Length: 450
Image (cartoon, rainbow, N blue to C red; front, side, top):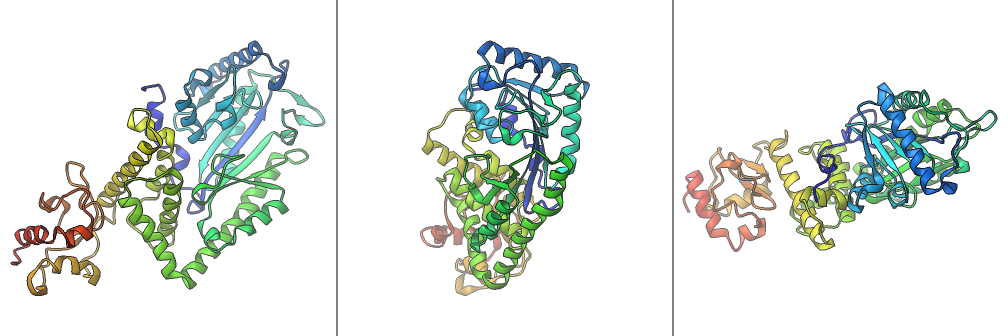
């Protein structure tokens, strides 16, 4: 199943770095331009050979433009379904492009910040994506890409109406600005209607993760403009950067404050239950995993969790999708196999993150719930030595999970006896069925007698 896109599946996109202004709520900013070539019919009226000629003309222009010399060019028509789906999941092509017919291509930078779809709905769809709220930076980059191509191509342009496009809503500037937002608190407080109403008032579209016709998995929403005629690019960009998105971010922050102030226990339960399930599940669907990751991501940003890197969570949102999972696994999987491998992949990533990250070892403060497990293995509740501290779930040097779920009590993960590194055992099993074995190993490790 090896293809040229295998390496793409293994690396992170630039727009998933988890930085940029307002990155705790704004996942990414995207600016897209629709263009058509003069002298060619629009795609709904283009014959098969015409589509090929358009694709070849654009490919030649990309090769001649110095600014675009590093772009990776992919013939989408020749890709199998799995590779096309991979590109959709990475937001490099649309579903419409993946499911189309005839000659169509995509060219993108190695970091995937800029990309060009050929023969989607229009002859050209230029796109730039940035992490966080960086619409102005995305506009500057896409404007440079547009100018570089226009030196070698002639666009269909009308003096009165502007750039002509296949869909009337894109006529004019041909620009589509969209921002991907993470809005879990608005959902939990049943305040999402505020976003919907604001969008309707401003003539904006609210869509799911992959754009038109998709649902909002994991509390992720795309907000985009619907019309481009009669307004300049800078007008649209300024509205998004200074009015629309800051207002929605303000709504989400207010909802998070309400949860922290009035529903803290329920919020903590939601966050920690999600983390626990992600760290222990053996079967999990992509939609279920997205929802749990959404809750963990919110917990990280409101200070209820500290041991996980934001970039890790952002990458997981992408890598657990069906095509990515199969590319990483190296073969096609059934639905049930994907659920198994997805759960294992998440457990491994979170285990490594918690071992390596700054929160891998907690303070020596002895919280009752933690020490009860260790004390139950020592006679008479005898106090354990100070060398025994609690360590968040990690992996041993061989890459196996430590205890599968919960916490172990040793100075370092590597010092936990092999008998305790049982892989899939849950804490409940260790306390119950394996209590005697754990007690013996803790006694050997700490010098506390039974």
